[in-house]
Amino acid sequence: MPHERFQFTGEGGHALAAALDLPDGPVRAYALFAHCFTCGKDVLAAKRIATALAAKGIAVLRFDFTGLGSSEGDFANSTFTSNVADLVHAADHLRETRGVPAILIGHSLGGAAILAAAEKIPDAKAVHVTHLFKDRIDDIRKHGEVEVQLAGRPFRIKRELLDDVAEHSLMSRVARLHKALLIMHSPTDDTVGIDNATNIFVAAK
Image (cartoon, rainbow, N blue to C red; front, side, top):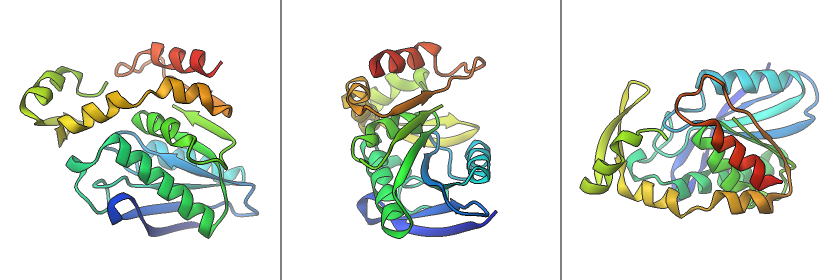
């Protein structure tokens, strides 16, 4: 399947690394994928989802958020709001260069970011959503910045990120979406409880 790599300008003027997976034949629709916290566009889950959708005629744009993977910027200075803004920039780029982003897909915290960005991406017809470092939250709030281990790698997490996430009322946004919404939760997920998916489902109704 055709695969293109390029850059586009994200929040703060940073160059963000992106990949576009295309079907062999005509494009039925374009999708935008948001990876999990501290992951990247090339994480196995993102690749598999993009490949499977491309086989069905759906082109998928995936990219590295600011400060991650091959994208510019400092991850420690990024926030939930800046991630949402990066998604809106990605949707704008897709719309301007290829076609409207009809499907929004988010994995883990990327799912929360997709839900927050969805109301700013009016072209989207459907949204698909699939407590990291919770034992260090008190330390982060006390010291302002703490290094945590995520997926075996060290990351600097600032108090501003926690405060920013807390300010976003995702459930009220979900209630206003009025878009097709698919929520998936792994039965072996020991990081995020099934109640999170239930809350999203109830809010969407």
